[in-house]
Length: 352
Image 1 (cartoon, helix red, strand yellow):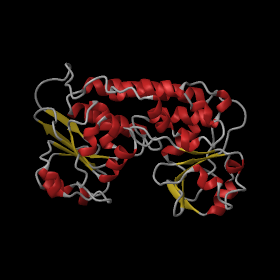
Image 2: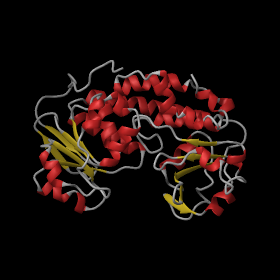
Image 3: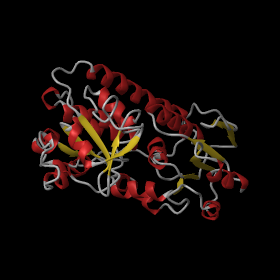
């Protein structure tokens, strides 16, 4: 149930125009806190709702963001988000300017680092647009501050960012205290229709190292090139990871590997250490406001004998802070994918 209402304006927010400096260095000025916002990048819609503790000011989003709302718990917490128009841009983030204009937004959020072709049409139509970039936790911090300021809720943004900073410091310190062999963890961004792994320089590579594990797809002997890299099955078999993480960007499940003769020689398959990444208010695999929950989950998956968290209680307290919402036992099971992952080793640690 929702236990607190969002959409308020912080008492500390000064009256008068609000100057927003986006990640292009451009300044957009609002005469008053934004009442109607369209988001095109991911996960801008989910972050905006978390900052606002409400979907009241979200009037449009790109379809992939709506899918995350629909498939995760955000649509349950804020049913109004499911009714938000989600045809404002295509899969390449090219805006549907006519649809955006029809929503009469005070502010439009768009990618600011993917060329002028997707942002200029909005600005040329007279819309106020902030341009963003994405890929690190620092970017998420910037988004939270920017959205909070646009909503007239700067104090709220500061509180959320302070909590994430504290979690980052705690997890970094904790990762250095793990003992024994470092498990080899591979994150599969794609499995169905071709393998794509998180290589050097990816956010996923960073949190694998943070918790004290290692990523064989990164560094010497890893995938060629940086970022999310396509590989063939032979390469994954050669790395022979101890743990495989299946991301939320396709429909792959642990049983798809367990039931396949192709993967029976993989250590992660033999030892039943394939896991579908949780899905909460947003996908846990990429950077978001929920990322500290991903780090703690992965630390428990990688080092089950050294687990130091009651993750279910952590999700509850985090969701109360983000959304003013207390998940039920069934909702916690769905977020943590207990049914999906129960055939995998040590997953009972996430049960009620």
